[in-house]
Image (cartoon, rainbow, N blue to C red; front, side, top):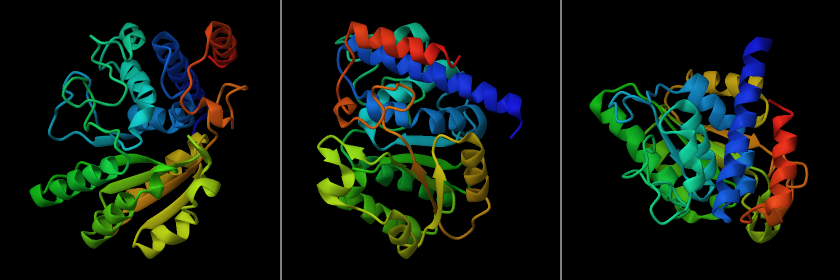
Length: 275
């Protein structure tokens, strides 16, 4: 990847992270840790990978994205705002009673959201349906979904994986955000779902393991996924929970806690240095 493109993406991702902090700070609630860990991959998807048009968010030919780990909606909203689906200024209405930016994605009320999610396991299942629909209709759009590592403890996730392989959904890309932490602590201690790579291969997936904060690796993995025929692709993203904010990184307490004013100012200062 050219250095200029990489720098542009890094700045975009830093702005996305700033947006996330603005949202959860204004709401005084939300899920910053897992939102920050997927900021890089979402930035790449929406600005380099997917065919989407903010002026035509329901375009039947668009690529689909499903945030299966729906509690990290602040990350999705942050990217959608930067892409132009709605004004950045609206982000601070997150979780307000009269806002269209709910605590979890709402496909009926939020421009650019393709699926309402929040109940863990639901999103990947819906993504499988979208990918199969494209096959049945002879359309060439692709479907992408991000699944949480803690979410992968859900049986429905593995039922969806069986479905995806059975129907040879090579137009589906499942991305697992492996930051190693969930609300109750380390994923490996709560209910260890690893090894993801071996299990997904056994389920019939083409599997790629990358650094989820490295744009070169993200680009290479998504390009590789498009060459795979006859089976779905899973990209395991090795990430850092709270990435970009020093005192939030790898701290399970930031799974579902909003920063106070002092913490917010400190985090903003760190991220602005990356712009």
